[in-house]
Figure (tube, rainbow, N blue to C red):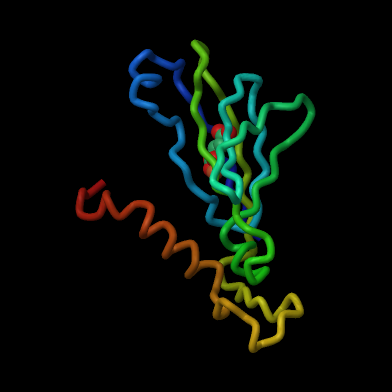
Length: 149
Ligand SMILES: O=C(O)CCC(=O)C(=O)O
Ligand SMILES: [Fe+2]
């Protein structure tokens, strides 16, 4: 099993952020199987519903947010959809969150047939966790290619 801990700092909102609808984190889905997220009391996390509306996922003391990731969607044959979400810090204070991303070891093959889906109904070919993550990283960071960092 791989776990990644990602603390995120969101600076206090500036007037220009409001004017230009600047996100702290732009709309995305998480790449892996599951994410557990602890957010502070600032708010600002929003989730996109299936009908395309953005709804708040307000902080509730003593709870964690659980996001389905792309690997869970693929593995479950699209039964558990990965959640599109974004963050806009609208407060004058810094916002902090900590995400923990979970996925099986890189060489693990994920196949919807593992979860009882008939071979003929599988919408996704088996894929290794490592290959899936590498391809999602390549897409997400394509704009940095050749910048030599
Ligand atoms: O800060 C948050 O509430 C969410 C962060 C997030 O979506 C992520 O790290 O993938
Ligand atoms: Fe996320």
